[in-house]
Image 1 (cartoon, rainbow, N blue to C red):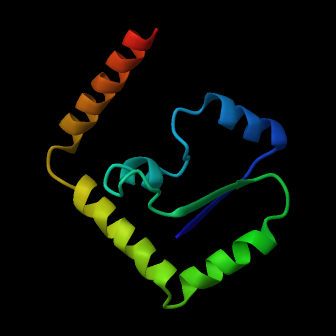
Image 2: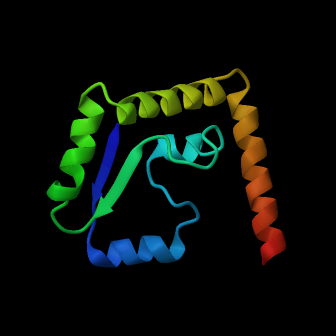
Length: 106
């Protein structure tokens, strides 16, 4: 899986300055804990033509390669970690923990 976002240079700078996570894609945000802090899928933000950088990545993910198998394994770990009964309660607990941490940092 390859996630791409075309943004302008200002948006790229703002994301770098104000984001609370290094990712935008939901599989990466949710899967970071299940994958040892690593992204579940390849994610790229770009403001100019990314073809030369993204074509080899996309090609590797389309064919039976180590990159494809590793991506599928990361997505499988994400599924096992996230799609469990009690998700609403876990989400509420995570939100409370996050907000408590921000309150103590202020």
